[in-house]
Image 1 (cartoon, rainbow, N blue to C red):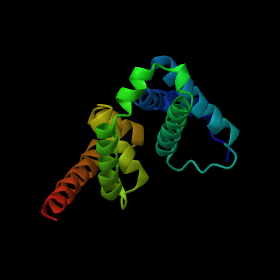
Image 2 (image 1 turned 135 degrees about the vertical axis):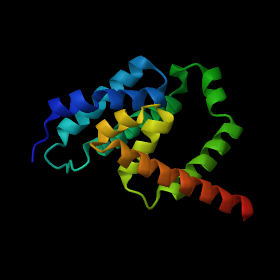
Image 3 (image 1 turned 90 degrees about the vertical axis):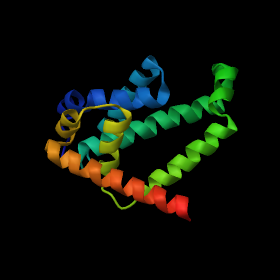
Amino acid sequence: MALDLDQLYRRYGSMVYRRCLQLLRDPGEAEDAMQDTFVSLLKSQETLEATYPSSLLYQSATHMALNRIRTRKRHPEDRDENLLHAIASESDLEESLSAGSFLNRLFHREQPSTRALAVMHFVDGLTLEEVAKEFSLSVSGVRKRLRKIRAAAFELHALEEAG
């Protein structure tokens, strides 16, 4: 089944761009990563199952942006050395790893779209209505998933604090 890339670009392009911008923190580089995400989709469209296109694109955009960050780190001469050292400080790295571990435990039993949905609302700042539209859900459906994740996060945090 061939994907309608034009429709996907119109519907999810801004979401992909926001995710790339959030990770890369550079509008030009985020735009390049967004375009690369859709080019990658174009190249593999015949083999992809697009049951949840927003999750697929969100995950692809994340991988594309992270690959660009890795490339930057491998070639630091292309970037400001002071900026790289500030970003990669040990305390920040430890905090990021701890947060990542917590999030992996929190979302490991959830649908992939639930993580994307939570990030879009809590991190990217989209309203419940905007998130619902992106995922073709009702606002109450989004609210229910977010409430469930919030409760699970409090419970997991309490268990970690106690143990």
